[in-house]
Length: 136
Image (cartoon, rainbow, N blue to C red; front, side):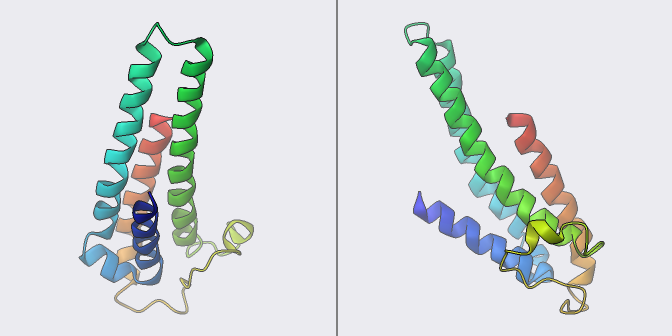
């Protein structure tokens, strides 16, 4: 569990610190390749639990809540990175949401190589965020 968390954190840091590097090396796709199998496993477990008529309603509800909590963690992760990217277009829009993050992404600190990477990465982040909400 901790390995997955650390790897996701490292990929998140790369996405925030060096968008051009992240785009060039497919970090957003690699992140999803880590996230999706874990989500799929949790969804399958929940599906089996919800179909099992031998289990109590409380056990089925617990399974549902576990899946929701699991998805919510990834939603918050993707949402946080997306807001960092969106703040480049309107720095005041997400000021309260991202003021406590360790990001170093701003218009002033972006390299010229990073600027063209912002929109494609943001597009992919928002698409995956939509997937996560749909799974919930």
